[in-house]
Length: 362
Image (cartoon, rainbow, N blue to C red; front, side):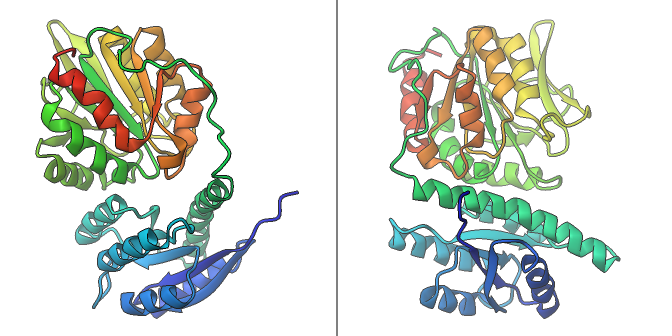
């Protein structure tokens, strides 16, 4: 049986009451050790300097050095620490309007994920909810620790590669699926391709209800091309970028001479709503062999069924490589289907794509 090293956690929050709640919850989770609890960002940085934890739970809205400022400094120190394992960060947010915007920005700065501060009237239920959330996030941290420990071992199976020549002569749409780590990956990939991409881009990102609006706003600022949440019946424009709304499936359908967006309130698929599978299945039926699908970093296996549909229709599937993923569950699940044409680091995706835009191969 594998022996797990305890996950060492630093709690950072200006609320003494919430720090106590979180510590109570964390101490109930096996193989977790709280090594510190501080009330502001400056104290957090001092603690990290002297005794780096594996994970920091970081309040988004704090007086003084804000959560985002603290996160930027942690990211800077992580770069300086390389190749040592990074200090991972989980954002803690009350999801007010300001908190929601800052949470999305934090995810794009490299925070691993976030949890909501429970606000129900029942303390016991709040503690149960908080523990469940932290158990899910700590499982991701364990996966990342394991990846660092085995970084010299490749777990990506061999596959056909399309190399410099796409498998189809013309892409008419790009579909991107992502989950954990996705906001950061999208914030890097979209600005690199948006200006030269002459076809619609569709994005399904797993994110909590209420946050997709702020993600669309943030991506719009980053890529200089408007990113909008999907609206049922909206006609797809050639240069449009469409983001699935959290809590609703996105799909496309052909209506006479146009393609239009659809939304669905059907149950979650593989625990996800929106689901990458739902969108890719519909997009394959509309675009056929002219669809390019990209699976980015993410937990779980959403997208695996969808890429099979893409491949059956003659489309192309590329996925992010494990080394550049925050969590490689979704790309690995896609690879396991045998439907993937190319595995690329995130940093190389734009250079793989843009020559085909410029040469009008799309």
